[in-house]
Structure formats: structure tokens, C-alpha cells
Image (tube, rainbow, N blue to C red; front, side):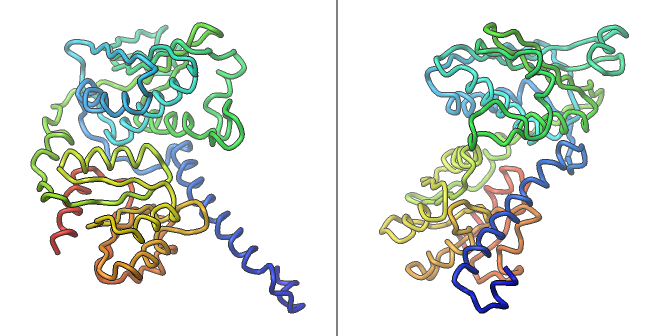
Amino acid sequence: MSARIAQGRYGDVDRYVAAAQGAAKRAAALTHRLLAFSRRQTLDPKPTDVNRLVRGMEELIRRTIGPELALEVVAAGGLWSVLVDPSQLENALLNLCINARDAMPDGGRITIETANRWLDTVAARERDLEPGQYVSLCVSDTGTGMSPDVMAKAFDPFFTTKPMGQGTGLGLSMIYGFVRQSGGQVRIYSELGQGTTMCLYLPRHYGETEESDTLALLGEAPRARVGETVLIVDDEPTVRMLVTEVLEDLGYAAIEAADGASGLKVLQSDVRVDLLITDVGLPGGMNGRQMADAGRVSRPGLKVLFITGYAENAALGGGRLEPGMQVLTKPFVMEVLASRIREMIET
């Protein structure tokens, strides 16, 4: 590109700059995922009741997998506590269920099962763990199954069996990194044509389990006033669903968009929007900041909450935010999001 500029050939410079920016954003997202695989991500471990966590995720999982698939939850009685980052465990469970769904295009059954496991020396060695007490969280499907070759590569970064453009190959790698960093292990049990079971083994925690959970905290969050509407723009369907679920639980009307162009179309319409919540890194050539700025042309008082990773702050204009704009850095818990939404709408 420098040669073209030196020669006065400026015609394609914008295209090259756009391509470079896109590559930089993809690299930033990739770095976050690889940090997870290399077990160096920042976790916030808390004593966690896995049964309660699964119950809290069940409705979202049903919506995600669709009505064509049956979902069964088998929760062990007297389940031990584990010390993990509950947000990361929710993300792992949802991703495992999405993988199970994708393995059953013609329908089938997903089973989520929890259990207490006392691993002796032999059983622990088979799972590459220390002997002791563990809690298992397993997701089983009745899908296509995996060959031994596929199982051997399943945790490798970038390995995917999905068609080009439909998978990064990093989902299981991230789950593996999170579980290993939490002192546990992930194991695959599968046969071609018979289905697959993915099991997370997490060490037992002997302390008290925290009684509060996201649903309880959300129950204390301020409620929406009649008609208040929030626009959520994010290219990740699971993020949109999670945020939408929180909003609807609090009484807000939620509108979803998957990219900047779709979000801007809503903002340029006559639809009521009290707050825009947008990811910074969006596909399609228009990032979240650009969309918000364009939306403010027709809605000068638009309030904007940017959801951003540590590597995306440059897209916010070097941290220069206009009045009525705030940033919420990933990862965050939903009760913090709920409080921030109310605070921004009221001010």
C-alpha cells in the first residue's frame, strides 16, 4: 500500500485500510479466544451450585436449540458445590448444547446430566486428573457421533467439522481452556451414528455455596416503565438472546439487530428506542460507534451503551465518548447490565 501512495495511486487505499481494520478486529477477537485455550484468561471463580445454574439456563437453551429437538435435564440430588466462574460455565454449557444441536439436523434429543463423581486412581488417570471428588456436567446428543480422528482433534484451535464460514473451530478449545484453568478436565465419549457425550469434570468445593444467583439479583433490579424500548445490536446470536432475556424479564421491549446496517435502519425509523446497546466490533463495514454516531443524526439525544472487549477500545475513538454514551467491558454479569440500563435511561 505504501508503494501505491508514493506513486499517487489513491484509488484503492480505502479498500486496503478497510481490509486491514477488519483483519485487526478479527485478530483481537482471536487473541481473546486463544487466551482461553492457553488457560490465561481472567476468571472470577465463585462457589457454584451447578444444578441451579442449569435450571437458570434451561429456558434459554430450549429457545436456542429450537422445538425440533427434545431437551431432558437429569439433575443429581445432593450435588456438591464447585468453585468456577459461573458466567464461563454458562457459556460452556450453551456452546455444548449448540454443538449438540448442530449434530442433529434431522431432530433428536439433548440430555444434560449432573452427578457427583469419586475418582479413584485408575478412573482419575483415565481422565488425566488427580484422584478425588468431582462434579460432572455432561451434555449428550443422539446425533452423528465422532470418529476417533475427529475426537483426537476436537480441542485443537481452528479445528471444525462445520462448513466454511459457519464455525471458527475455537468453541471447544475455549471450553477446554476454561475447565483446565478451573482445575478440571473435559472428556468426549462418542461413536459414529450413536451420538456424543461431552463431560466437564470440575473439582468439588468444600466451602459454602453462595445463595444469590443472577435470577435472584435481577429480581431486585429496577423495572422498566411502560413502553420503554431497548435496541440490541450484536452479531453473536447467543449474546443477543441473553441480553434480550434480561430486558424482557425487567419489562422492557427489546429489538434485535445483527449488524450495524440493520441497527441503523431501526434508528432511522419511527420506532421508539430509549437506549441502544451495541457491540463495538460489528460485521458489514460499520462498527458500533459509527452506527451510534449515524443514529444520532436523526436522534440527537440517543443514549448508547457500548459493549466492548479490552482490544476494541480503539473503535470508540480513543476513549472520547459523547454525553449519553457509556461503556461496559466484557465480561460482565447480567445484574450489572440491568442496573446500568436503568441508570442510563433515567439520566
